[in-house]
Structures are given as structure tokens and as C-alpha cells.
Amino acid sequence: MRQRRLKNEINVVPYIDVMLVLLVIFMVATPMMTTGSVELPSAGTAPQKPDKYLKVQVAADGALALFDVDGQESKLGSLRELKAELAARRGLGDAVLPVLIGGDREAPYKNIIEVLDEVKKQGYGRVALETAIK
Image 1 (cartoon, rainbow, N blue to C red):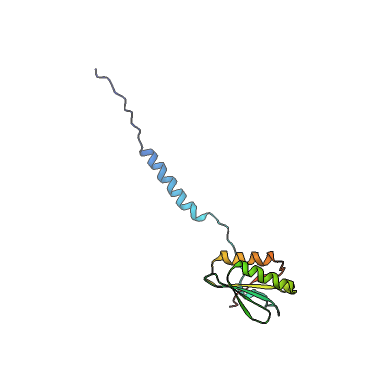
Image 2: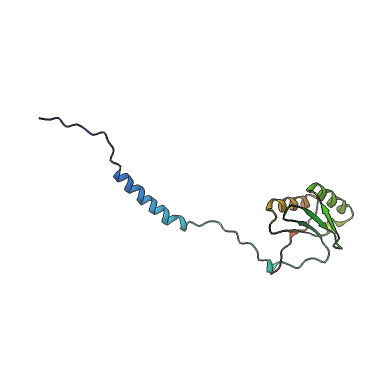
């Protein structure tokens, strides 16, 4: 009589079936997972601009400009120049004035946040982001 030999192979067909079932489950369940959403305020509900304010404008290329209460523009080369200009105006009593920060739609968000941070560091209490009203 012939002796039986054992096979030392793994049958992978049942594992493939289980893998495909898990794949289908994940494909169906993934779109149903809720993600945190941020609801931004509408520009139409923004309050009116104050009568007197300073305005810092950030261009698409990162160039800065500071507008005083009368609308006179001062071109600034860097955040260091903005810091010096804001410190000088704070000495003149402009620290109580609100500051509007306007950024070009194409301006990097990082630049606007750096300007916002610098204005707050200089002691200006009322700081807002300027929006276009639709």
C-alpha cells in the first residue's frame, strides 16, 4: 500500500473571499463617516466698517501696504517695517483705532496670519479681517 504524503501548502481562496468582503464593507462605510465641517460666516452679515480705522493690505505676491485714517498709502517691504510703522502709530495714539486686514484672494493664508499676529503683538485690541460684501 502506498503511503499518503501531506501537502504543506496553504489554501488562500477562503482568505481572498474574506478580504473581498472586508473591502466591500469599507467601501460602503467610508462615505458615511462624518467629518468635521467648518461653517464660515457669510460676508453679507459682516458689520459695517468703523468711521476711522487703519488698514493693512496684503497683495497676492506678499507685498504689504498700510493705509492711515485719511487713506494715505505707505508701501512696506516686510513684516519688520510693518512692526516699526505700527509701533510709531501706536505712540501717536492710534492704538485705540481698529485695524482692518485685507488680503488678496490669491495671497497665501500664511501671510495674512503673520500680519494678524503682528498687529495683535503691537497692542491693537480691535483687529478684523476685511471682506468683500456681495
